[in-house]
Length: 64
Image (cartoon, rainbow, N blue to C red; front, top):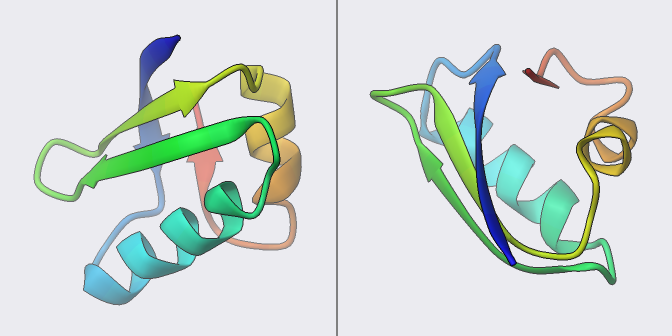
């Protein structure tokens, strides 16, 4: 399943790398595509939005 969300806190490629790394660490995430310009993230897998935000806890990023 593929879902697209808005994400706040993205400012640079380093942010994209951090978000990608943290989300790919989840067993329920198969792929992540972060669009820095549009501030959107597309996640392939079975993770719920709440799970994604939990993985980003302690960072400045939030999936809306």
